[in-house]
Length: 445
Image 1 (cartoon, rainbow, N blue to C red):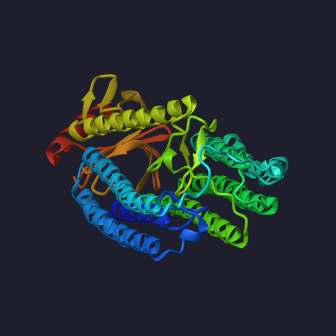
Image 2: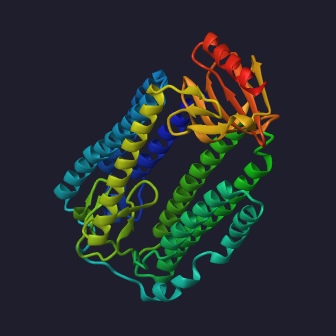
């Protein structure tokens, strides 16, 4: 319950902050509308912005209330389904709300003739283009994270090592995207353009480097204490790491936005291009722009250019890929939620029949069989856990590597000791568990 509640709170706050950023001027853009400096302080503009902020607060409260429905789910498949629907509806609601106020502001802009500048023009500062390669934080700062990952490989921790390698690659790709930010001109003063670009490139590359090294250190911590820490402790540590990652991204984005706005306010010769007709909510569609990814007008991060063939391919490929992944996960968890498992005992072999995590071992490998009333605490390493049962691979305190096939809160449990492996098993009823135990005892005598 704690994990679900905190996840709902985190996502609600993240969406609130993301959509709230639309109400802050970012390079002369507010609520997805470009306005010249003379119009930005107009009382009617400020009224629209204020109304949007209030509506965003109300929408977030409604979204938070709707998220409580997720807490009613007891099966993982239903939890995943409700969670996906809730996030989707919250995103759609935020986009629709921003579009409503964007249209209001756009109508006011048209009535007053507040055209901010030329259309279909991209102005590049050549001085910034020459200096841009010097702006990113050095990629050598990824070396400590990479050394930690290599150390995990050498230590014999492939699961943590591969996860760490994937994270280092992901953060490095984000670093490369940030380092290649185009040298666009927002002012006639090249010093202002260079400062704007420096703030963005240095801020984001520092963020990705810090996260790569932070995540690598966290994985090293997990590897060191994995066998000894309780699952709840490691789960809390993982949750706090995720929270810290989201906080770092939001803090970086908002900090960059504030600094750039201050720089633009000090420049008296801003160059403004009106690109409103290329934006529809969070989507950008400009066939005259060769960039595949562009900075979002509000929120944090990048979005695809649907006017570019490669941008369309990446966008629709991502949408389809995420949809297929979520659908596949739903059916996998549905199978886990609705399936049962059993113990098949033969003369020479014992087979645990379970969805996805079946297991078999020879009868002669059994060193000990006993019946216990309490299940030791454990941490899942590769398995599945629902409200009804836990199956798969676990690290159990006091035992080490183990396999669990247990219905929760249904003692007694059969404990089977093998060489370097421990198995905990029970059936749906206590009598069935004792029947299995009796048969196993006869085989090991």
